[in-house]
Amino acid sequence: MARFLLAIDQGTTGSTAMVVSESAEVLGRASQEFPQHFPEPGLVEHDADEIWASVEVAIRGALEAASVTASDCAGIGITNQRETTLLWERASGKAIARAIVWQDRRTAASCAELRKAGHEALFRERTGLVLDPYFSGTKIEWLLDHVPGARARAEAGELAFGTIDSFLVHRLSGGALHLTDATNASRTLLYDIREGRWDRELMALLRVPEALLPEVRPSSEVYGHTRDLEVLPDGIPIAGIAGDQQAALFGQTCFQVGDAKCTYGTGAFLLMNTGERAVASDHGLLTTVAWRIGDATTYALEGSAFVAGSAVQWLRDQLGLIEKASDVEALAARVPSSEGVVFVPALTGLGAPHWDPDARGLICGLTRGSSAAHIARATLEGIAFQITDLVEAMAQDAGRPLSRLRVDGGASNNALLMQFQADLLAAAIDRPSCVETTALGAAYLAGLAVGIFDSQDTVAKVHRIERCFEPTMAEAAREEHRARWREAVARARTAQGAA
Image (tube, rainbow, N blue to C red):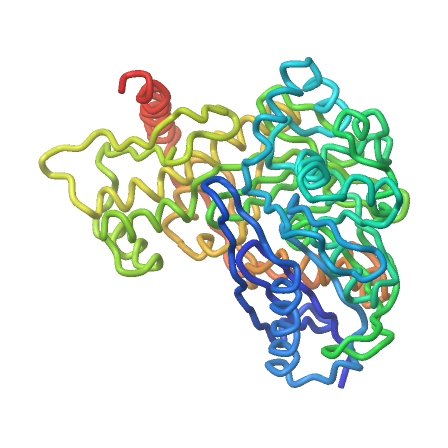
């Protein structure tokens, strides 16, 4: 049997393992969900042992589905839910508390205090991030302050912090390794993305001991080898790490400055490669590390829409317009256009470039002739409008227009949505043959480290595009759509005040 790569994609609700051939063909995959814990409203936690158990099940399933022998694995790549924060004992590897998930809002007050004290500009300059409980730094501080004895143990060097990639590497290596890569470090509020190191001034502001932090390594290299596992033999190289959105950017082979991808999931994440330059945003976007290979760091601009696929779930679960999410395309296709109906999917506020948490979802333009099909079509169009706003902001920050967009994620399978997206952007949309590009990115990074691929050019050659959506909409029609959308967004942003 030829060698293969094993990608572990540890996500928010489940873990996926994928077996990838030397020619980038997916030979087998398996997923396993794990429990979500909600101790109070706004609090979201994961159990480390439950995460690890789901990873083991996924690995076994993927190997079985691919009919491969684990000893033929050339290397393991890891990609992970970013920002989720875990502390464990160095000696035993046991977590001292449940992980605080990226969605958790318990540290909102801490972030507000830091902003009030005038520290936001410093955090923004050093880390490229905004002060928000989304990121890891204030989560670490909370755990140290609320788990009995944790702060003293951390200062004594007895505890280790990690995002989930670090935890997986620790388990895969039999406890030998405590490290992370630059992409995950860049999501902690503790890492200077330009200097490429943990920042002691930021650590002091968040009261995080240096002894707690993992070593920061490149995104593609052999970090160590598997040891003492039931699911894999000893000696397999652990060779690639990247946070999920950065892994998707790499998996889409967005290797040139200006290349961009959008992942359409529950929300939508847009990243653009800005090369060696960490571009500061004037439009509410984040500046982040895209990957680091060797001594070379590549940066990206990132913007997100809070609601994408979840808008379709809302049509299904709250309105009962469809039985399953995949039915939305057929329903929307029953009408040739939304006929003036606009849906602003601000169901949890608006993210970049608006950053209005008080905005409310809005459907406007309804007439007596409006139907479920018009609302379904307006929902898909609302997702595309949000991404268009992000692309426009990103182009202004980067100083260059977008000519093509690479897409992935479950909703990218919706051809009606992708065509409308291409029309709004006046840019081509490339959809790969495998839309699970997050796992592919992890495999590619590992493959570079172990010599399966000799360069990024080789990776680009094996990446396959399944379909290209070319824009067909006239400029006048495009501007009419955009004007209608802008008016609807303005209404959505005043809806809370009017109420």
